[in-house]
Length: 153
View 1 (cartoon, rainbow, N blue to C red):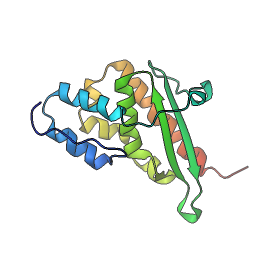
View 2 (cartoon, rainbow, N blue to C red; view 1 turned 135 degrees about the vertical axis):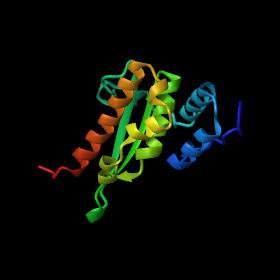
View 3 (spheres, one colour; view 1 turned 30 degrees about the horizontal axis):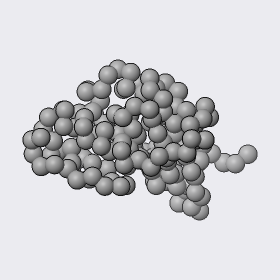
View 4 (cartoon, one colour; view 1 turned 120 degrees about the horizontal axis):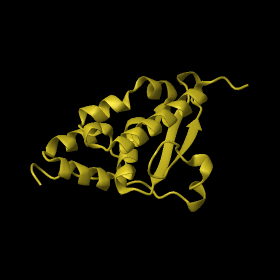
């Protein structure tokens, strides 16, 4: 591994992930780091691996759950949990959660995770199917944020 080995921990911030990526010169090292990030995800209960939680458009199986907590005038806060049957995708989910989980719905809609993935060099090193899956996961998260902001009918 070139550069210093990044440290891993639960609930890493996106800034820590970006910093760790900058320490890794080789794509192989970055790829392994993404897989390691996926291992930090809390496992989902078997019951959460349902069709209702499945993200469509991913080559791998991906499940995403959203918890919405109202926060008055500030707007709702969304927290995400998820899983995949593919190690690299679990890592991508972990990065998405570092970007979006625990944030207000408006902040989620104002944040372009795909641009961030580009800046990390991730998108260019993913297969077209993985890139499509990444877009599907981001769109699902953004749709959840839009739904949380929609007035109750």
